[in-house]
Image (cartoon, rainbow over all chains, first blue to last red; front, side, top):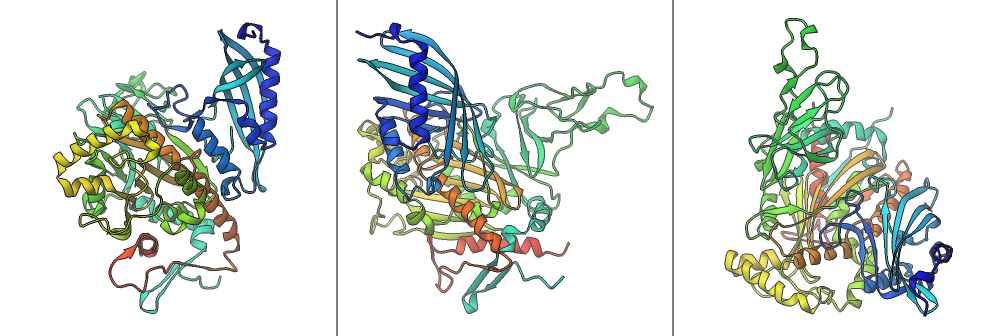
Length: 164
Length: 427
């Protein structure tokens, strides 16, 4: 049986790169396949990066059913904020396994995400991810992903209308 | 230069209300607005719950000025301009915290949280006419609060805040009454984002119910998918209006007031909250009825309100309570700050439900706000044609006697009439 102990950083990196590629190509249904059915996706407010959902106002605090609803919405041409869709490009780096526990792996990674739309200036989202990955048979799955922005306010980045 | 068109053509007798689009596009208008609108109105600064203890402070930018919103040693809410009386550096550079002293690191002048200058390094080198008491931190000319909502004005002659808020006070009361103790609090976590659009477009959008179906189709789908009945109920009995209305509240303040059918953490259950929430929401409702009586409780629990306090404060009391203030950065760009407000004594579960409910619709990652932002930015792009396409139409409901619907535009006209009045006042 594969446990978290046998997963290498390189394997985690490959997994995160694959995820980034799916998101940049807007293959959101395929991206959903990477998630466990109790997955959570969170983006805390920029002035409360360490807070807990339920205690503080977040930008995004999705449980799995909300994530699915988000994907459904983003696939609808009437999700006007992403219709036409923006182009995004994700740079993932500084990937570290911070904890292994049974079939769970905690991962930290830096991100630099560029969003382009119309002729507007680039909107640059910088920060780091906290992932909880789940080892399921031969596969990794995402149980939790929290994107923590370094931007002191969302400001010119405008909306988090795509999956960050 | 040829004579300019008026800002608005307001001719109800002939069923005409038109808005000149240069009010939303021409960069020269903004400089005038800063003086004639923002410096002559009551402007929201902060909520008392953000600074509960002596020495607590929040720094923020209000009306283009850095200010310190704080609580002094006598437990009074105070507002100071965040600029040293000596050479002008900011005396507080933290976003929030607790301090008994504000220290200007440039030359070391130190102020108390009552604004008094306490210490000046090497004071003996100043001449004999130098008096510390002349160098307190400056306060805005007027600072007043209503039920923990604190406002400032740079117009020393402005009417009192109470008079200014007029009938809007009733709508603030409906928010405050959601707390058994009357203590509402700002919840941790601030949403701050820019929109590439004129600030007045967000005023309009914040209580424009006409756009709901076309702009927020995906949000309505989400509600439907979640088992929520999204159509307004018919004939809701005697206690409540049977349909949404738009109202002028005086001094440019206005509201849309709707019967709720899409859930309220106070105290209207919908399927999204989950079966387990039913019992607690029932209890919240019971407390409201005991405290306020059946009729007032229904008013608090079963109606949604989108309130605009002229010029730039919005309180959306719906699927949650949102406080939203916004500021022009340029004619085609604004900065938005949004907070969530909730009863200070609400349970952990109720708080979580409120925050979750907030995010289904509101905010830069919500299922609706990003589409509002897109709409406003799209308007602004289209308005680059303002020299050719001069007028926007705003006549919905103008030919009706009496009550106006939430999807009419009386409330939008109310805002614009006040804006026009202030902009065209002789100095």
